[in-house]
Amino acid sequence: MSARLLVVALALILPFSALANLFTVGQRLPPVSVHDAGEVIASPGETGYRPWSSSGLTGRVRVVMHLAGRLSARDENAPLSAALAAAHLSSTRFQTSIIVNADDAIPGSAVFVRASLRSAKRESPSTQFIIDNRGAVKRAWQLTPGSAAVVVVDSAGLIRFAKEGALTPAEINQVLSLLHQLLQ
Image 1 (cartoon, helix red, strand yellow):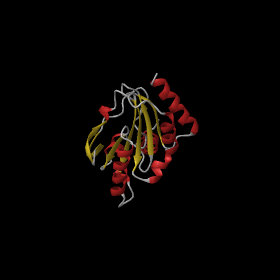
Image 2 (tube, one colour; image 1 turned 90 degrees about the vertical axis):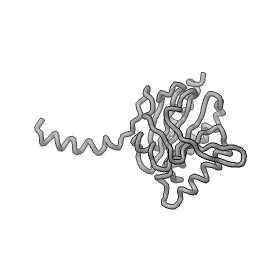
Image 3 (cartoon, rainbow, N blue to C red; image 1 turned 45 degrees about the vertical axis):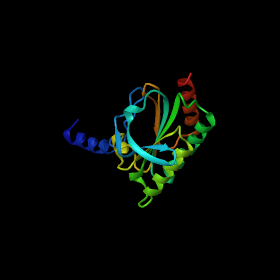
Image 4 (cartoon, rainbow, N blue to C red; image 1 turned 60 degrees about the horizontal axis):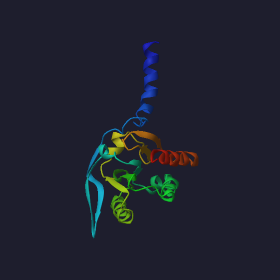
């Protein structure tokens, strides 16, 4: 292959490879920590934040949802959220972790995103909510701006399923079947 052809091929491939996420089934999620906001903690009468790290995603089977701080990203996988709620999975062995990239919110709306997540935490204390004010997770996992990603990890923290974008009904069924299998 001539050097010129190689340069052209690399120029065509590299921009697309930069958009690919770093999820590999059978591997751990790429390490990342969120210190600006972080995990929403609810106590009687108030909510606060504590630093969050992907290294803590062990001990339970989890569905990790990463969302841009926009309604369109949340709505992308609303059918999965409804299916998870309807499945009534054991909160001692299963947890949903929702990471919201407030850095990817419509300008001026991040304050509403944070208020919504604090309220959601009070309504659903078994769900883990993480507010990422600086987009650290999106960058570390090389996610597409403005979108959503769904990752199923087993209790050892290994990826068992991953997809960026909206899940199809067949993929939702696949996720539910996988969760039931992992929870047996």
